Structures are given as C-alpha cells and as structure tokens.
Image 1 (tube, rainbow, N blue to C red):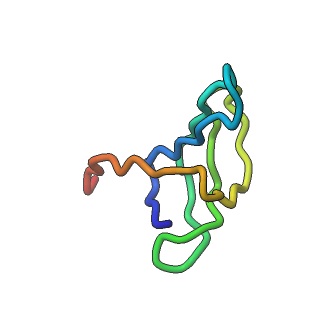
Image 2 (tube, rainbow, N blue to C red):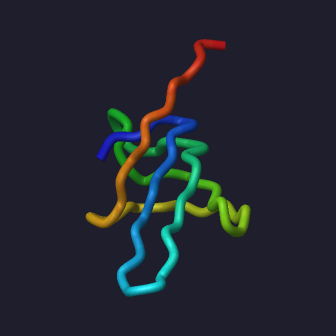
Length: 66
C-alpha cells in the first residue's frame, strides 16, 4: 500500500450494519509511501499510528505543491 499526506484511507465494515471508517493521512513513516501512517479518524478526530490491513483502500487525492 502506498499513501501520501492528505490521502484518505477507507476501511470497509466486516459485518452487516458495521459502518465504513475512514481517516486522513497526516504523516507517512514508511519508505516510499508505505505504512505505518499517522492518521486522523473522521468519526472521532483521534490521531493514531495505523498499519492498514487487506480491508483498507487508499483514495489518492489531488495535492497542491504549496
């Protein structure tokens, strides 16, 4: 998995009625955009170090060079 600052990581629910969770990548600690990532969860605002599993996908967003 490769992510960059500002990208969105989405984790699908594992059970029926389990919500989809998502977070914003704040820092990338791995080489070449790899995990672990410091992320901010959209549902709680908490920041955590995150190692995504196989159920996670990255939404690459347009990044400005500013």
